[in-house]
Length: 425
Image (cartoon, rainbow, N blue to C red; front, side, top):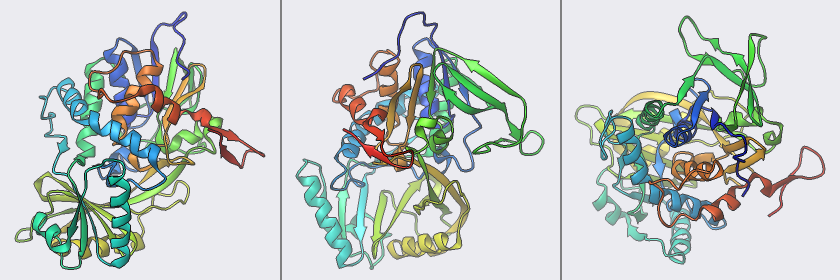
């Protein structure tokens, strides 16, 4: 583990990225007495924090060969209830309710399938999880429908995962940012980062979309405009998929992975949505259904790699609605309230990068589809690198040294030229 030197330090921190992870890091550091500025546009539109479904499901999303992801996710999931309570209180709410409403749903999850191949995948996953002591229960289609009556007759098999959680991503984003501001962090949306280096961030004046509109992030450059530099003791680069554009060492390590999502709302007379998170396999394609309060539902998500493209395609909408309807037929009567695409930050091994890139520069990116799930543990790990005490919300079982080793960017080496990356651990 390579931490940050305390010699001649004034505890000034700049966080690049105003999403959930960047804002949570800002809150934690500001609470510990650091002077914190968060640089970046308001996280809306294509931000993964804004688009995310909100599954907190390391067991449901586990798969053989991804043991590090399971360890990280399980450690973070254990911290989530205390983390949610802490940020809710810090934002002006109560321990079980953020100012805008509860953050977490603790109903658990169901994994379901519709054919023999889906059943084989579920049985393989059940064996894998059982060998690691994870609590899952195999279900017939009828048993799955007894837990969630909205499931349709096409569902033939299932696994019940009682420990899974879900979070309202947009409510969480507002809450964490409010907590950071209450702790003294400053959010500067007038400037966009062009490059992050040790102890300094090169900035460009944001281009606004219309009078008073949100700033636009121009990936890979843009029109010349006013530029500046913000200096500090430490920079934390938490800009999601855009992190690859802000430091040369991340160019081949962080990639954008597009995910398209549909938001639905129950209509008068329709069946209510499931209470649990449903992760379904429909003839080999995966769809998830994440309930929100007020009869709302998030359906996702496609997974395509096409650079920084954030268009919503007809194909993705058709596939998502078809597969979601096969699992829960009542969704055919729901109102479509939003279609949106966001960019997840992928890494070569789909394990995040949390660690030092150079003296005075830390990275917290590459979380792929698990950014929300891994927020508490990422905040703890960045805090350790900053020399902060263990966070009160961090679970007792979290081994920070082990997890910092697993997420260290130094596990990768560029071999045979810039176009080839090899894992060296």
